[in-house]
Length: 223
Image (cartoon, rainbow, N blue to C red; front, side, top):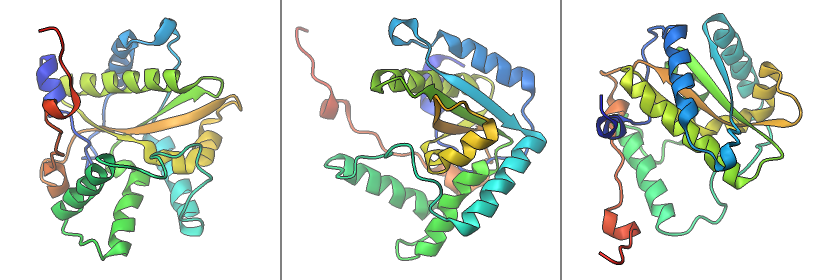
């Protein structure tokens, strides 16, 4: 698979098959992704891979806590700005509406939407969960470096016939994740990622979110 095909076919998969992913495959993906760029070559990312019995145990812990504290732990950061302006607010709104339309959940059915959001904390059925961390001493430029590493992982996964779902939603359970992974105090959870084989039959995986036309965000000079 060439890079263009990997970029075009990458999507946020929200329904996975239980098919296991070999450890060797995950190792190859993470190792090749080391070539991702980072300012000053800091390579500020830390990755924890969880699968099998440990993943079952972890998701069970989250499920039990979700029943008691549905809002989760105090978040490490705001995923979106609290006063999200345009055109970003409209894009986010349409993404959600298009996604829920694939599974026939109307806007007024808040309970069904919450149930679907909680699927994040089941990794959407994926057999492998990746948790990406960064030292608390790092700033926004290094957070962007971690994002570039994650993007490289997602594209390499496509080369192996796998799909992913990056999950900043795990920031809602940062303390719980940190306890399970035994993160040192100086390290924080940045995001999670589900990894596995896409369920081709599930309607939610037919969603292809829209992208703004090039003319809307790019300016060219000197050509």
